[in-house]
Image 1: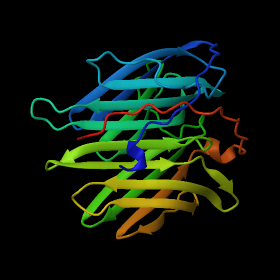
Image 2: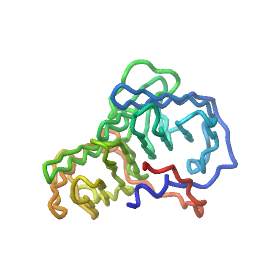
Image 3: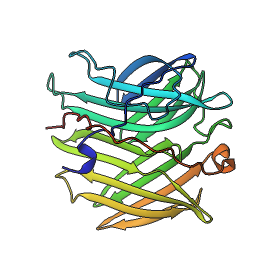
Image 4: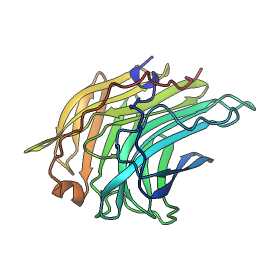
Length: 270
């Protein structure tokens, strides 16, 4: 098992909830399948308040979604979220799964596509916004990282939006011709340097159809300039894009985290 499959990220539990209420909706699209869930929550003074899933689904439900939200400045809100989806084999259809966690800044009333990874798309909506909004809207301090992996007559792309002071962890799984394929990306918080950003990353693909991909390391990325790294027969192209708000923001000191609780696992594909 690769590390991406072990668990979703775990965060300490918040004891402080205050501020105005909001609705946060997630929409997952996989081919012709769409999965949706809406939760309502208040702005939280503790940005690290997201713990194990506090809204467990009913047994018949397949999608888990939890979030914590706090003001990011102006109309923008920071949304720290966790998604877990597992659809078992049924009616002759192969099982599918996806896990995603990260932080993104979104204005109230906006809908933003935060991830496009493999055949999956993930969109978040704040307060019922219907119109799609660019990930790099002026009020936000987001970045978008694209990992374009290729090799052994195969190619896959993962594109994800995040904020520089938090990480990204996404895994998507499905079956190809009856064989399991799990593709994903982990990114640590970015470190700002004079020449760009130090990006610690792991891009991985695990399938019996070809040798495994395990591109792990650090790369100094200048925004808008693609950098390629080699990984035993594979090439991974990394492209970092930044919003105007992120370019203008000074790097903030990270608040100390409490010790994480035991992570909650998601069933693996069989």
